[in-house]
Image (cartoon, rainbow, N blue to C red; front, side, top):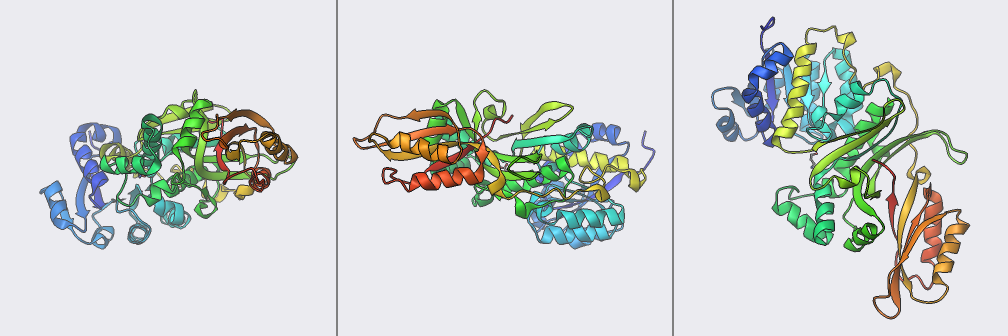
Length: 444
Ligand code: HSE
C-alpha cells in the first residue's frame, strides 16, 4: 500500500518519552502506516547516555552521542526533539530547520520562550514544527484548538495543565495533608521531579497556557507577560474552607479574550494561579495527575478535553500523532499546510496581554481577626468602599478565645480594587495577619 518510501526519523533524547515513542511506533507499526500512508521508522538516536540508548533500541537504530550529527544527516526527514530545556534543544532545533528537516517536539519551555523565532524560521524553510506533546501530554488539545475549533472566535481557555500540582492539590484535599507532605508524597510516587520548582511555582503551566493563548487568539507567543503564581504557599486550611463553601482549589492556566469594559481596555488576560472552582464543575472533578482543558468558542459553546498530561506512552501518543501528520504533509504544498500557530503568520494580531492589575476575578478571602464586635462590619465597609460586592461569608467559631477566621467570597471585581481593599483591611488593628486571597472562577 505504500506509494512512498518510509519516513526516516532522528530522535534527540531517549529518556522516558523517547523510549515510549520508540516502543509505540514499533508496536503499532501497521496501524500507523495505514494512517500515515508511509511507514515511520526511527533510524538514528542521539543521547548523552549512549549505552542506555543502545540497550533500548538494540540493532533497530543507529546510536550516537551527538545530536548535531542527526540534525545534519541528509538521510533524516524528521527530527524529534525530546531533550527538553531552553538551550541545547533550541540550537539543535534551529539547526534541523536550517537543514530543511521537519521537527516534532514536546518542549513547551523552548517554544514558550523561543517559539516566535522557531516558527518564523520554519516558515522560511517550508518545514513543519509540530508540538502536540508540549501541552497536556496525550490530550490532542493543539489539534482541537487549531483545527477542530477553526470556525470559532475563541473566548476563553482554562486548564489543569500540570499533573504534579493537581496530584498535590488532590492529596491535600483527600488526605488533609499540608503542601510539603503532599509534595513529598508526589515525589515518592514519581509524579514530581526531585527539583519540582517549575511545576509547583506554576512555570510549567504558564509555558503551556501561553502556547494555548496564541493558538486560541492568533497572537504572538508572549510568555514574559504571563502572570504566574504557584501552589507552594497554599495552606490546607484554605482547601478545607473552600470545600465547606462548595469549591475546590485547582491550579489553573487561564487565557481570556476580553472585550473593552467601561473601566478597562480590550486585551487578553493570561495568568496561572490557584483558583477556587465550583465543586459541581467538570474541572473541579479532575483528580490526581490528570489534565483537562476547557475551551469556550462563540459557535461551539463549552468544550472540555480530559486525559493524561504526562507519562511515557500518553506523551508518545502525541509525538507519534505529529509524526503521522508530518508524514501526510510531506507530499503537500508547504503554503497550504496547517499553520503552526493556527492563524496564518501574517494574520497574527497585536491584541495586548493585559497587566495583571486589569484582570477581573471573584475572590476567596481568609482574614484572621480578633473576635470582637464590629470587626466584620468594618471589613465589609472597606470592601464596599472599593466597590466590591460580597457573595458569601463564613465565620468559624473562635479556635481560641480571641482569634478566628472570617472567610468571604466576593463577586467579580478588577485586581486593583481588590488589592486596595485588602490593603485597607490589613491595616485594621483587629486584623491579626495577612489576608489570604485566592481567585475564584466560574470556569469549566
Ligand atoms: N511536569 C508536567 C506535569 C508534565 O506535572 O504535568 C510535563 O509537562
